[in-house]
Image (tube, rainbow over all chains, first blue to last red; front, side, top):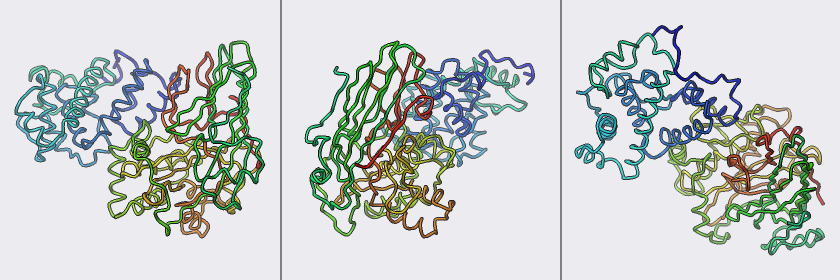
Length: 203
Length: 361
């Protein structure tokens, strides 16, 4: 999609048209936290109350709670790749400094497993929640070795909010995809491999 | 509701008490030499009123403390109605006034408060009465702007990992705030107090509601009960800090938030790392390094003591303004008002408008 002709389905609200001070604050802070970026909240800004409530819940699940932020951020990237949201897959939280480029490139590949068992269990759970119905027995057995029930709730809520947000971002077509796809070739996809290739080719 | 009201909380003496009698207000006696009594008047006149108007003011602290007893909160709503609504867990009183359309909304609150300089003797443990466990649990809770998880928890654990006792941990957090934050003069008002964002941004600049809230959040995340104490400076500093006192009786922009941490054997311990950074930035000639003698003196004093040229309003977070259609406020330290057009900017005193004056009586 050529950059200059990109037409989002929902345009971003211009900064001068943001009159709600709390929404303005949410947008300003997104410049620092970056995941999601300001463009997300400028688009959601057509409905300030929804945008503010989303920000509050997102901030808690993404950077709060008791599960380490790096684990959730890597799972967020994995989900973005599986859903095929270029906008979401390009983002990186600056707080997740330990995530490597190799992890980002590999996290959604079908034959790759994370070396850290706790991270691996979370990625497996994100995968089954995104691609399947999330009830896989083996995944649960693995998950419960490392996470309390409260943490499983935290992970599930975060993964589902992420998946929903990814679909919203894709639907709104917030930004042009850019010259290089952020979704690695061969990544698992909710659409199956054929559609994934098609999505990547459009980028 | 009577339009002119006068509050006398149970156990609190009449506003007409003379100064010597006020010494008896403090249950534990204390040093009468440091006793002071202030009368603080807040006058709100909403200039841009449209439709019905609501105004909310923080009353002076409604609970007794070693540093303050409120003698009375007297309020008057011309052409409207007003009442005080109490949230005892936070020692907060909210003066809530309503004015019908067509009435010029004017609300006046006069608080008379006795204060006494407050210092904890760290060489004399076990004097403090045992605190209520429910109260201590309450001051360990996360709030909207003071989460105790994520980066707050991680930072708190890092800071306190070398501390063996609660007092060492409390001091470690204090020293960390002094060393790692700075007072940002561009911050509006006293700051927002969003401590998660403060840490995430890696730009630890702000004012008292940011830096002392950071102290409180980190302390809670480290397992130490702690609370912000929102209030206002009412007099010049007798301790010799120009930057930590008022210059005149007009204290409209002198709001200041302090902090307390609860330590077994000492009770609620006053701290104010934000004021150390204020001394560093503002004490003439300004921009003093931490190694400066004046800053070092303030740093030593402000872990364990407060000069009471300041009065406290409340310990509250996430305050729902009674009858408001708008969102809760992170804390109630400024006058708040709402018209048919929405919430007014509480930091824009001139256009709001409000004026706060204080005098020693």
